[in-house]
Length: 143
Figure 1 (tube, rainbow, N blue to C red):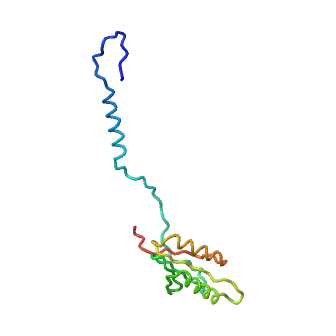
Figure 2 (cartoon, rainbow, N blue to C red):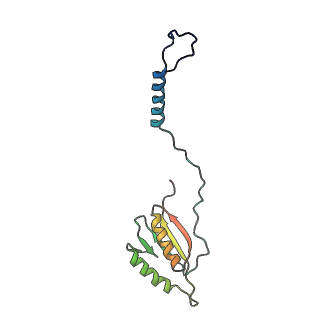
Figure 3 (cartoon, rainbow, N blue to C red):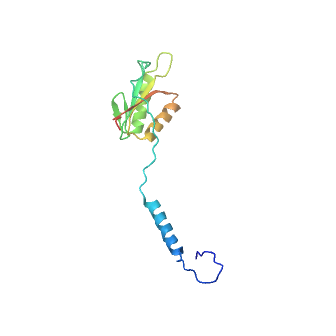
């Protein structure tokens, strides 16, 4: 109970404010927890969409990743990872030059494609000793 210091022991004429302060505190906590607060967003400048680099070799292999997680090699679609992997191995052998140099690899992915699929592809290419020359993300960029 909140009381004002009083030199006399007579009952105070002021009302007890403890219950009122408890109710105000509970309402304040309720309002803070249920209020719709606008999310704080970080503004960022994204790079402009550009055409692929002119340094693409003529024997480069273009790989695609769709939104559904299927793969493609130069417009041949594969929904199965093992079939895609086998076909890519054949294409890699076909595109090697006479000195055994590995071809350049371009990856085009849908903007809604799963990052897990891209990481799986990138790690497999890394195991084969290939590096991705360029990654192109396609889709509606007006969002």
